Amino acid sequence: MTLRQSILALLLFALCSLLPVSAQENDEVGLWHEIGVEKAITKNWDVGLDMEYRSQDKARFSAGLGTSYKVCKNLRFGVNYNFLYTYRPDKYKDKNEGEVGSEYWETGYNHTPRHWYPRHRFSAEATGNIKLWNLIKVSLRERYQLTQSRARTVDKFKHRVINEKKYDFDDDWNEISWYEESVTDETEPKYYPAYTDQVLRSRIKIEYDKKRFPFSPFVSAEAHNSVNVGDHMLLQKVRAAIGSTYKFRKRNEVSLSYVITFDIYDIEDNVAVRQHDRKHAICLGYKYSF
Image (cartoon, rainbow, N blue to C red; front, side, top):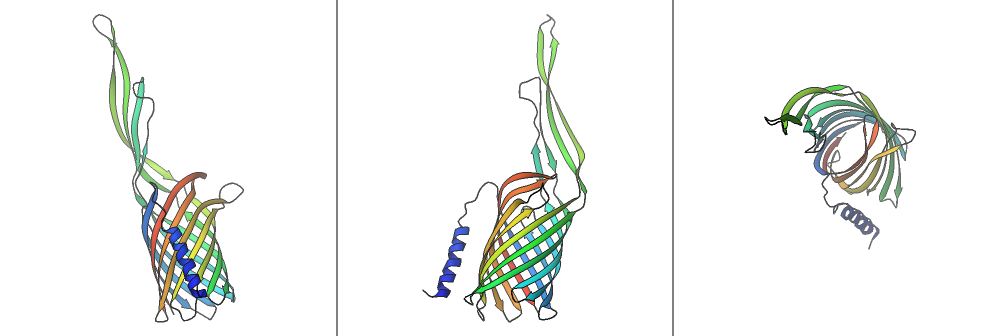
């Protein structure tokens, strides 16, 4: 087996190790679309504009502008700004109090309706890479990311069914009892405070990079570490991807990849909440360079 065949077999094995992940109750499947334009200002400096739409439970549209500069053969720095418009789906939360059959018990739910809200994201990154055997490119990217969200208020619907035990006496002064049921529906404002999220993202990527070969298969893994909580970093999620890019007509590039994200922790009201969710996505991309 040649070296090229060995490398392609390794990438195929990595794909097979990711795809058979069995679905769980908390799994989510989506489709990501990416499109971008990149302009070379000089040999080492370029600017780019990109847009993305993630079709999933928490859908997201984003538009970004960035620039990067290659300081030497194996090191590039970049800064980016992204406007994010995120969809928050309906959220139901059961609200029960007391045991059925007791003096008083209450059942019901809170419903926070779906809505869209904006965020602003700024990031700075450094990417280093090395070439092995003139075929394999290994890159490590460290990205600091700051996301700002403004305060917002959403009307929350509250439904309650209250059962309260009542007592009385009959004509013979014998005590009798019954349950009196009342239903209440009300709306109250749900306030989401403004927040600033800071994340350090570390990604390693291995890709087949043969000159004049249009396909570039790749695998990557990325850790998202929050630096907001406490005095240490908190691993929020791990994301792995496998796929390939295809270049044609010199300036055009399309990509197809499978992405799986393991949510480990989320930040709610400045408190770390344990997560057990996995998100699967098929990512389709196109980029034009000139």
